[in-house]
Image (tube, protein in one colour):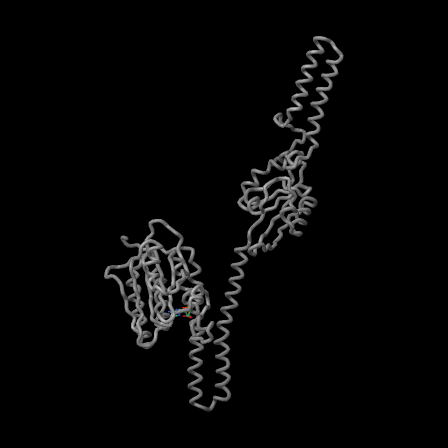
Length: 445
Ligand code: ADP
């Protein structure tokens, strides 16, 4: 492929200033006078005119305009601007003197500068980037530099610096990639792994201790043995629950970006879950009552995942309801996003409320909801925003663990997020808590 060449002597007529054209006009006029009168003065004027044109023309070559466009090299590099503009990421073109000779809108917006010809150092001071620019211009090296900035929020950027040879001109091209999202996802994963192993280590440590006690001091006492075995069973169950919940969560996350397209009857799902949980409710001496229309409440959703939502909510509600109490499960059509949240989630005047998930506004979408209400102790307002955080347990914050995994509501939130629905809670200490999940209705709204 032929290398494009820049001709430093190429001048466009419209670039020649008015003064130069004045010089030419003067010279032509003087020549006419000279022919007509043969006066020496006319010849001199002609010469002065030509000299004037030449002087102005030459001066243009050496004048460095503030935006550096006047230099031959910069003019050549300036021709690359349309290419830089086409890049989606912020990009800069820096000449051998360290001046910005090209930039795209993304770079100007991000780095908040306007003029060309500004020195790179006036907008970016990171030494590794500046060194990479020097290396690109002088040695033709390509480098990738990662750096961190903390103005208001922490940001991570990777800057690719590559040499550009355009005719006689040498420059460096800088392309900036924002790495903040990737790094915070990596951090979240690392935190999650650390949390998960910490959560598993606690029951494991208890099990180890119990085994040691059984093998040692409690060896000969049948009564102690039974007691310790029962305790071991509790810890083993806890580990199993944790692993089950962790696996569910990662399975849900795997296809969270693909919304379901199936149809499910939410009332039917609720009925099925209530039946399945009947033995647990009986054991806790809690009545679970379903309030649902007789006709189906059809939603766009995956039946199995919706059942998991309903199960986690009813399980929590019955866990926190005192013996002899009641849990009310209500399934119904709502309306649009705001109407549904209001109908299903704003019933108790003195309750505190938090929306843990809100679907993006979409016109013509109608939702159906499930509200699970208990008469339990309720949750203090300042804990509400943290309920769907992984491993968060109010009891642990208050120092009286009840053995939950703290993953149930996180699972609900992720499933509802996959369904592009909403999830909210209203709670009032002393009165109870109500959790509402709503998803797109598939019925004839
Ligand atoms: P867990 O396995 O601990 O129940 P969840 O994610 O389901 O985990 O719930 C997180 C925390 O939220 C629970 O530990 C509990 O403190 C609180 N919580 C959830 N549901 C209720 C409820 N119905 N009433 C009172 N507190 C609740």
